Length: 299
Image (cartoon, rainbow, N blue to C red; front, top):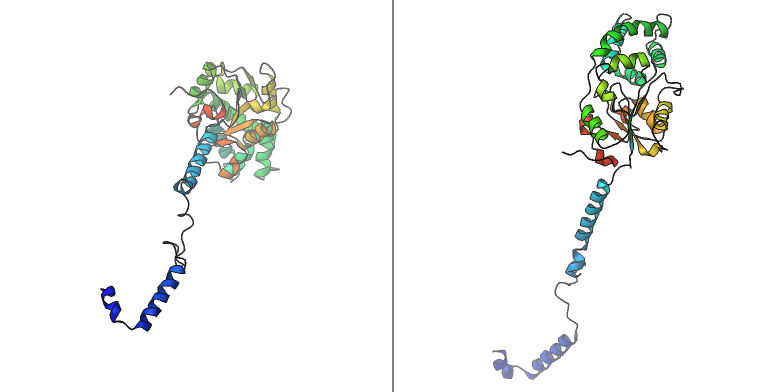
């Protein structure tokens, strides 16, 4: 239609129209999607393979994280157990007796005090008890131990094993993992506590007690764990030993010995006391041997 009316238009107008067409054809065209007001998204301008790269990178990172999680925390070859509150449920007896003694003086035995006493030798825990409770002049550490002893002796034989203990010990023994017990209990208390659990303790390579001559200082000193390590056959390195503890002082002793520590605390113990442990679990039922380079459970 435009061509049909061109002859009717003035010649001057036709000349202007032709000039405008020549100028328009000489100007560079703006590519679609790259308009000055709507610049092209630089990510969309890249090839598809490159745009997928971040997603592929995320997948690689996830795979690397999974592989790292599958790596054992350490290459453990030997295991050392604490006894009270870890293998045998005896800590409740200590709490019960000490509450009775303090009640006579109008005082309360709380978990902050118990945390300081746990794992210590008897003489050291008695001194802490008297000092922390302000009983100087009212009760000596020696009197405290004497009074406590008579009540504890009647309770110890009735102690029971804690959850997961037999399962783990039988598993480690069946797989040839050497085990030992390192307990702050003296020989007399050890005999009372273990008299109904002889089979379980017979699976231990050896047992080190609090009154052993090699144990010069109680936990958090590393003495007892180093003594237990030296009694294994061969030259065992501390880094190859895994210690199971329920007490903050016991965890500190294990770390001071250069060993790894798994803590199985009483749920009433404040979480601030968990620091220092390499792993904290609610019960030995939650322990996964493969995380420490040990043979996994068969289930």
